[in-house]
Amino acid sequence: MDDALNNWFAREILVHEGALMRYLLRSWSRREEVHDLRQEIYVRIYEAAARSRPTSPKSFLFATARHLMTDLLRRGRVVSIDAMGDLEALNVLVDEVSPERRTSARQDLKRLAEAFDRLPDRCREVVWLRRVEELSQKEVAARMGISEKTVEKQIAKGIRLMADNYHGGRQRPHSALVETELDTREYEHDQQQGD
Image (cartoon, rainbow, N blue to C red; front, side):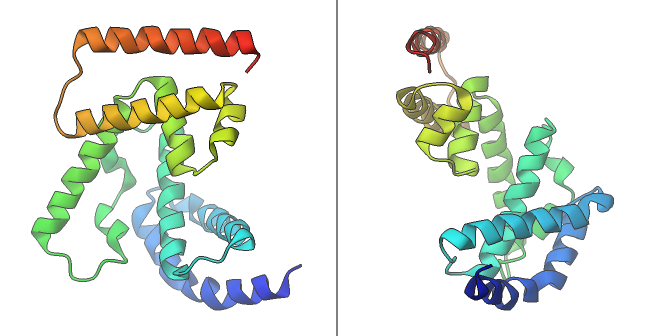
């Protein structure tokens, strides 16, 4: 056991347990899962801190909690952003946000979630693993059984499509057809290469 890490964890993370529990109880609709959520958050933070200590431990704690809840909702294939419960509780680290700004932030979050949900399945999974779960390009490729080059292309495609969707642009049918053909070719190439 790493005593320095344990001391840091107790001093910087565990001191916020009360605030974390209140946040989880406000934000997560299934109260019976809150204690398990807390433990998973602690595991993620401890493992991350073993590699590198975060500069803002409290912010990192609540960001980890938000990421875990979002991940669980996605895995459960919950589509509605309203299913997260009290969205105002997600802004616990922001002081004195105006009602207009809060409404705008909700609308932005909803548009971003909708843009993400419109991505093709494989592209969406690559973007999620790379940008949300923060896996390396190599880890994403290994997990999905594709080449690193394909991961790179899917990230670029996902960002472009999300930006188009977020800003209200619609993909032209011809371009969607071309991208589907490119996806098929990449998949066939990966299969031939044994990736």
